Length: 390
Image 1 (cartoon, one colour):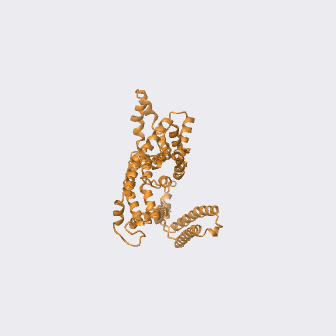
Image 2: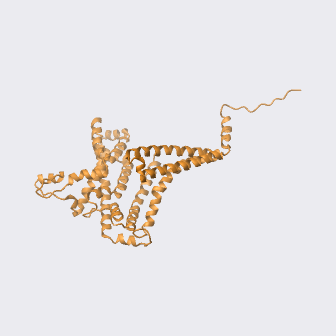
Image 3: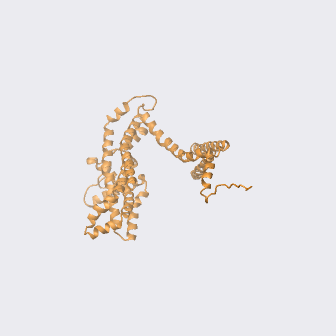
C-alpha cells in the first residue's frame, strides 16, 4: 500500500506569515491589569503635577522663596510629568484588545492637547460670553444692559474707530515694507543681504512693552525752552520749530499714527522673513524667461514674482491683522487710551481692572471676538485653498 503523506501549504517568503501575524496581533486579548495601572498612573501623575504648580504659586516659602529654584523645579516637573503621563497613557492603551488599541491610540495621544485647548481657550470663551449678560460682579443677570451701555458709550465708538484705523494702516504698511526689504535685500551680495535682514529683523526680539519704551524716547516732550531729550522734538527744534507733545495730538488721530509706527517697526522683520522665503522659492527659470523676453525688473516683479508669492503675502497680512485687533501693550504703556488713542483691548482692561465692571468688560471682549472670527475663517479657508493647489 502506498504511503500517503500530506504537506502544509508552502509559505512564499515572508508574505505568507505576515497576514497570520497581523491576525494574531489583532486578536490579542485585553489585559485589565495593565489598563488599571495605566489609568491610576495617569491620574496620580496629573494630580502630582497640578498640585506641585499650585504649591509654586501659593506656597513659595516651601522652596525658600527662590524664583530660580521654582523655575528649575517647574521645568523638571512639567517636562518629566508629561513624559511619565504619556508613558502611563501608552501602558493603558496597550492593555486593550489590539484591534481596539490601534484605532484608539491616535486619539488618546491627541486628547491631552485638546483638553488643554478646551480648558484654556474654549471654557474662558464660553464663560466670558455668559458673563457679558451679568452685572458688574457677575452675581446676577442683567440681559442686554451691558451691550446697551457699551454701544451707547462714546469711548467705545472712539476705540472701535481707532481699531479700524489700525486695521487699515498697520497690516498694509507692514507687508509693503517687508516686501520692499525682501526684494531689495535679494539684490545685495550674500553678506550684505544677511546684514540688512538681520538689522530689519532685530526689533522682533524686543517685547511690545520694550518697544513702546524705546519709542517713548523718540516721542518724548519737554516744555518749550527746555532741552529736548526726545529725538523727534530735538530735530524739530533744531530746524526752528516748536516741540510737540506727540502722544497728546489727536487731530487727525496723529497720536494713534505715532503709535502705529511702533508696531510697524516691530512687525516689518516678520513680514520680510516670510516674504523673502517665498520670493526665493520662485523658480528661477520663470524669471529668466521674462528677462529673455525683454521685460523690465519692475514688470518681472509684478507679473512673475508677485503672483507666485501672493498666497504668502495674504497669510502674512492676515496674521498681522489679527495681531492688530488684539493690540494692547503699546497703548497701555504710552497713553493708556488717553487723548482719543484708546483701542478695544485697552478699553476692556480698563473696564475690568480700573472700573471694576466685569459685565461691560466681557461685552467688549465678545465684540472683539465677533470681529476676529470672520478673519480667522478666511485665514483657514485660504490655507486650505493653498494646500489644495499644491
